[in-house]
Length: 229
Ligand code: ADP
Ligand code: ADP
Image (cartoon, rainbow, N blue to C red):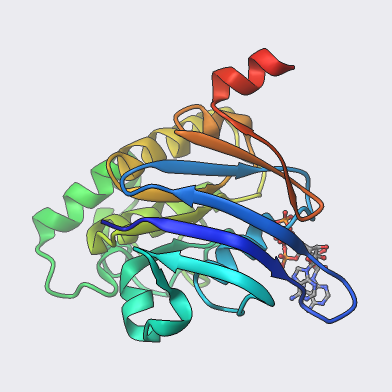
């Protein structure tokens, strides 16, 4: 389980400027849907509404057929693994940052999550491996590396639904490739909503939704959308 449905969702942060103007889509259980579109289209707003950082102005958001307003915040937070863009890490070790939220995880489980998120190589190269300090006071990581640590944390928690707002920071093509692979490993057989800023990210998505000025402008598969151009 872990299906998501947006049903005619409308939303504005303030009353006079609509941001989402009637958005309807499904993320079937186990599938990956990517949302793309120009900056300001409302993509990140969709992830914030699903996580209930804000409530819809009208329409409904359903998880497994239940309106998220009827679900407790605790079970909503447990159902959704949210990897925000521009992830901030704790001033602690890599191991702490991955294990955060699942303290009973074994070292083997932490390391398996790191492999899925494609950071095991990068951790081996770090001065003290898993005990390397990161965050403000520690080793400086790129936006993509921070996000992959956050992806490993989410993998370890294994929530039914994954929401990933891809880092917007400039990534070199090697990091971009690693993020894409991490994402494929993570989203396989897991209900995933990916806010994509790079085309490479959406190749593996089951459906791509093109959002423009708060409306769905186009939808289809990667191949289908390419053929339509
Ligand atoms: P995208 O992720 O597609 O770039 P966003 O969902 O972040 O777009 O933003 C959509 C629109 O909502 C933008 O015009 C943005 O300026 C506006 N917006 C985003 N956050 C807020 C906020 N907290 N208050 C008011 N307007 C906001
Ligand atoms: P991003 O574009 O990286 O998703 P945000 O969602 O935080 O970043 O912001 C998107 C846009 O919304 C930005 O242009 C920002 O200036 C604007 N914005 C963010 N918060 C507010 C707010 N409280 N009021 C008005 N505009 C906002």
